[in-house]
Image (cartoon, rainbow, N blue to C red; front, side, top):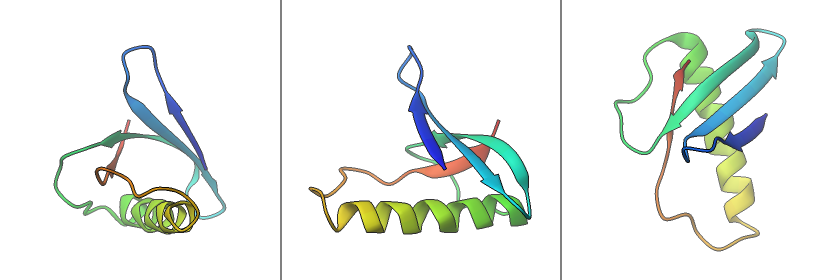
Length: 69
């Protein structure tokens, strides 16, 4: 997983997974929970990454949802 920010401030998540391949998702601060199976899997990966990162860093101010680009 790679999280990047473009020049407009949008957050993107690139994921390489053996089940879903290479996909790029835009991270939105507000949005409905994912419904599609691949988006749900990415959301689980993202939640796990955030929880691991948050355990060693100050807490995040908001949660993000993954939507496929």
